[in-house]
Every structure is written in C-alpha cells, then in structure tokens.
Length: 428
Image 1 (cartoon, rainbow, N blue to C red):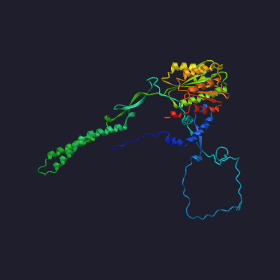
Image 2 (tube, rainbow, N blue to C red):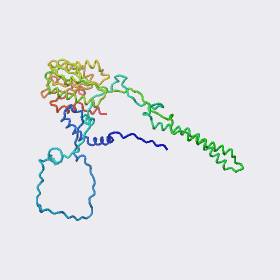
Image 3 (tube, one colour):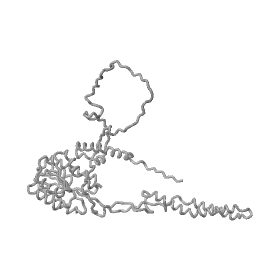
Image 4 (cartoon, one colour):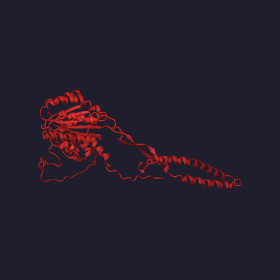
C-alpha cells in the first residue's frame, strides 16, 4: 500500500470564498455605501479601500431558543420608590447620544452597524460595477509576439513542477498490469502443475519434477515482486506551447481645453474626470493605451504629468485638437487593429467659426473610425455653439456619441456612470 500525503501549506485568505459570498449577499447595501463614499472623497484618493458599515438588522439571522417549560413560582423583589399605577419618567440621556453611530432617526430605527473594510480591488469592483467601454470589438493582433503559454498535451520529458500525477499513476498501473499478466498466468500454471504432481501416488510422483516446479514458482514470485510500483518510463509532464492570443486592444484619447476661459476649478474637475477614467481602464482592460492631448489655439500631445499639472493659457480652437487626434490615429493606431475612444472635457467656449469645422471633422473623419466619443462640458451656464454642433453629431451617431454637462465636482461620478454604463445590447 502506498500513501501520498499533500504537505503543501494552506493558502492565504482561506476564507476568500466566504468573503465573496458575503459581498454578493449584501451587494445592494455595500454598493450604496460605496457610492456615498465616492461622493465624499477626492477622486485622487480612489487608490485605497474603504470602511463599509451595514445595519445590524440587515445581517441578523433568525434563531430558535428554548424557553423554560413547566410551571414556575417566582418571588419578585419589592421596591421603595414606586406604587401600582405610578408613571416612570424616561431616563435622561447624555445629549441624545446612544451607543450607535449617526444622528437621531425619524423612522424609529436605530443605527447599530456592522463595519468591515473593503480592499482596493473590491472597492474599485463596486465603483465600476456595470460599466464598460462601449462597442469594444475583437481586433487582429498588433504583433505575433503577443502569445500565451497554454497546455499542449503530455510529454515524457519535463520538470518536476509540471508533472501530471494522475496520468503518471495511470501509466504505472497500465504497465504493472501488462508486465504482471503473463507472469501471473505462468505462476498459476506452475502452481496447478505442482498441486497435480503432489496429489499423485508416491510411486508415480516425480521428485525431480516437484523440485523443478517449486524453483519455477519461486522465480516467478520474485519477478512479480521486482516489478516497480512506478518507473521513470511512466512519468508524464504537462507540455506548454506558445499560442497567439486574440487581443481586445483599445486606445483612449484624453482631450482637454486649457484655454484662458477654463478656470482652475474647471481644470480640476476635468482632471478628476480623467483620473476616474484612467482607474476604470486600468481596472478592466490590460491592452489599453492612453494619449493625452491639450489644446488652446493649438493642440499638442503631452505626457500624463504635463497633461494634469502644467499651466497654459490662450484662446480656444477645438478643431486643432480633433485634427491632432486624427493624425495620431493615422500614424500609430490603425482602426483595423485598435478600438478607438475619445473623451473630451471643455467649458464649451470656442472660436465662432470653428464649431462648424469641429462638426465636419467628427462626421467625416473621426466618428467613422471611433467606437465611442464622450464629451463633458464643465459649465453652470447655458450651452454655446460647440454644444449645438455636437448635438448634430449625436443625432447621426446616437449609439457612439454621448455628451453630458458637469456643474460641480459632485456631478463627476454620476455623469461618468451615465457615459460608460453597460448597454443592454452589449451584455453577454
């Protein structure tokens, strides 16, 4: 009998399955708490987790208790303060502060809560729940160097880390059966012949034959014992091969107006919107590239640091940014290989004669190549000519062109969810 003992240490987070079951069960409460947390904290502070509280009444489980049965006689202690019919005053609290958390409720319900902490990954999972890049399509590989190691059958050669225990034991079992079968048949025949010889009369019995049969039986038994339980010939290893993988490649162009009409508050709101967008892309997609384009009267491609923190002023010609995006697509991101997305943030101000040019650029050049165009206008005032021209584009490309208005920082998250919510037609 051979025993195989698994001495591998237990993995970390042994209760991960139970935790996921808990998160799924109270998903509604956790999602509501996460949305409240997003509205409270800064978008730049989205990298950490969050402490979540759930009302205790929502996680309590019904229980059965056994009461005392039978007849009981109780002598209650008396008192020196109250008589029958007296009204007892309510005990005075300490400033209305109870043992729970939160202010007084007008619904007669307490605020005792069960608190736990979400990790960064779990927090972002709830933040971006139900969101996706619209119209993401499978594109051909950018290069054949993008491969994935996949299992490609079994081999007799390999490293111990890739040994297939099940297949190796199966091969060993088959080998033992194949080698032992003829020996067992010969052993059984020799034992029957020995018994037949020994049952003969002493006059007819052949001692030399008996000795020969006993030696043969001993030899066959030794041959059976010499067959190993497992041999190097039986070992099988998982074979790996490099296999090209289909890739959902996406590039998103972050376009921001940095003209003089964009106040510092407008720019800060735009930065938060793009930071939230960046976290969303990082969370859901591996093959995503970001291109940052800033513009006033002229547009230029910049890096992330300069996009968010450099200071520039000037007039506003939005078409310069759209032309630059078109040139970058033509030079580096062919639509046949990339999913193309554009997110633009502006205060809506533009040169009077330029809004018509922007509309024509979108209709004739950009939109036929793009999967999605999201435009956010950061202004509390009425819309200007750029918004009106963009509405004409949205009328033609209603499924792939979206535009929303942001007034204050608290509007960023709701607008973001509206722009990138999962469409019913896209659900798998």
